[in-house]
Amino acid sequence: MLESTTGSLANRPVLGQTAGMRRPPLRILDLSGSPEAMGYAHGTAHADEIRTYASERVRLAGSEFWAGGRLERSDVLDIARSCLPAHEAHSADLYAELCGIADGAGITPEEAVVVGGFTDFVDTVRAVVGGDHPLEVQEDDCTAFIVPDARADGQGFYGQTWDMHDTATDHVVLLRLHPDDAPAALVFTTTGCVGQIGMNEAGVCVGINNLVATDGCRGVMWTSVVRDALTRTSAADARDAILDADLAGAHSFLTFDGSGEGFMIEAFPTARPTEKLEAEALVHTNHALWDDALARQAPKQEGLMASSSRRLDRAHELLDRDGVTVDDLMALTRDDEAICQVSTAPDHIESSGAAIMRPGTLDFWAVWGLPSHNDYVHVSFVA
Image 1 (spheres, rainbow, N blue to C red):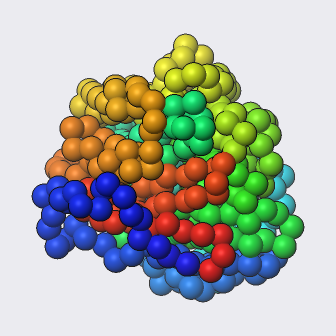
Image 2: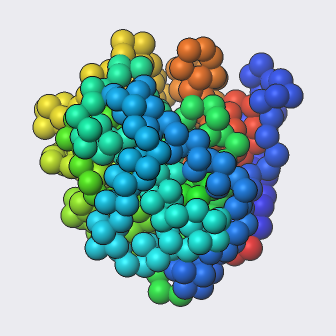
């Protein structure tokens, strides 16, 4: 079921609206059954799109710009293939789902690794080939936050923008999952990817920001880690799943649940400093905050670092108040001072969508495309 959100934002003008920035209502793909069946249905539903996206991601992963040295397609896929055992060891069910996506879309499992976990995979590629990290490389520039219960009239929120290169926006989809042997979940993601941001029926929320690692390795891509964390029944259990994962690259992960407990983890392959939610909102963007993580973070181009810092400061400013509502958080994701990013040269990063969750009530809102130009929809666990 889709419901347009109502409230104080309904009458606010959309910023600088142009037809080219408008998207249709969020696409929802209902999947149920075994991991293999869900993966195969996902792959067949968006086969052409997944093949196109995978081909482009494999090409980029072998380019000098991303890898620090040019690689043949076969070499890129050899590296991806070497990560498959880590995925199978991490979660046999998610590995089966990944292989099902590949089978349904007509690609190989190693191509599915690349299309589903590109930002971690390029950390792995650079570690394998010894390439330098170009300062300009940046994707997944999200602004994520947890609002504690006490600052939201007793029902806290998790939310974030999902910012990527503007070519990724076309591929956004929401998965409504009813697995045979795991909790039902609503998962914001892209076609061909098992999951990126979500909430399960136990009220456990998991979200991310990209970080760029100097300690990348052959391991599990972050998207499988998100989905595995969404099989847990508390924010603490989800945190532990992230701490235990054999990570290929770096992301910050945020977990939150209906009891009001929350955590933020700056997760690198060789370090995972963690902070617990207390009285104030937790906010993270795309630079490490703590010494153990800073020691493993790749250098950032000055303009991208400035963007990350502005978004962090602006989100803290907007969340420093009591009585935070879902409309306030939608407005935050639409903030044109720092948070809602419109694609411009040379980086072409944009807010490709956003999601807001209230685990205490199992409410989930999401938007496809720029939040400033598109409408949130409320998504239920039942179709």
